[in-house]
Image (cartoon, rainbow, N blue to C red; front, top):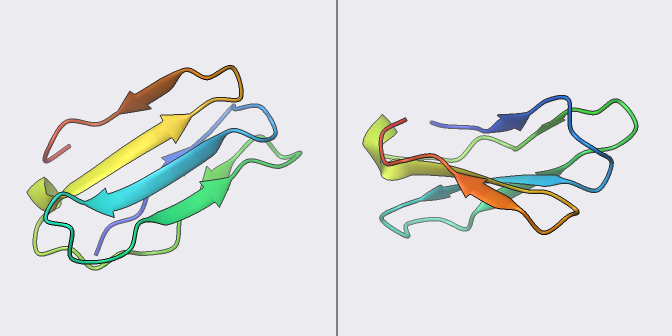
Amino acid sequence: MAWARITEAAPGDTVEISSTQGDDQPQTGTVNADKDAYTPMLAVPSAAAAEACATLTTGVEGCTTAGG
């Protein structure tokens, strides 16, 4: 299982967890007034199969590399 988190972000920023193997639908969390967001858990076969991405309201996006 895997999940993603973003902290100290702006309201409207998003974080997404997905499987690099495309097994399940990605899970998304959206930042609200508390500046944090978490995704629901996602079933993945290993840590290397999970990828987390954050998209800021400014349009900037960043993702983890495979496995962490």
